[in-house]
Every structure is written in structure tokens, then in C-alpha cells.
Amino acid sequence: MLNRQGMSADDSCSTTLTDYLKFDSEMSVVSAVWKECRRLIEAYNEQQVGHDCSHCVFTSYVSGG
Image: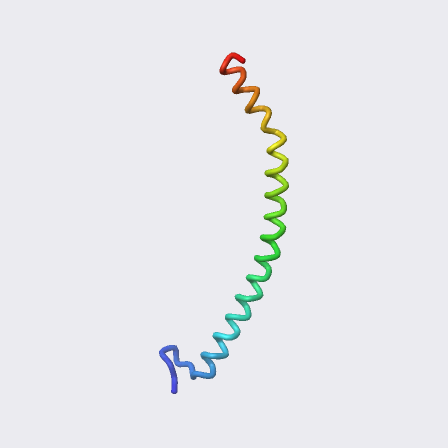
């Protein structure tokens, strides 16, 4: 029996499995890249905490302190 796309159930199942495996592989890459990005974001945020003094100086200047 053929489905709407003219594929048999076996072909459809095979295509779905192939698509899923491709998706799973791509998501593994995304996961690895995200871990590295997250590490860089956290390092950047920690670095910015130390550079917050420019805001303090500006605030002191504006308030006359």
C-alpha cells in the first residue's frame, strides 16, 4: 500500500529513520558547540564583573561624588 507521497510503509519508515538519525547527529554537534559557547559566555561574564568600575566612576561623577 502506498501513502500520499507514493511511498510504501517500509520506505516511509526508512526515510523517517534516516531523517531522525541525521537530526540526532546534528543535535550532537549543536550540543558540543553550545557547551563551548556557554563556557565562553560564563568567562566573559566573570571578566565583566571586574570591569564594572567604569560605571561606578561615571555614577560618582554624575552624582558629584
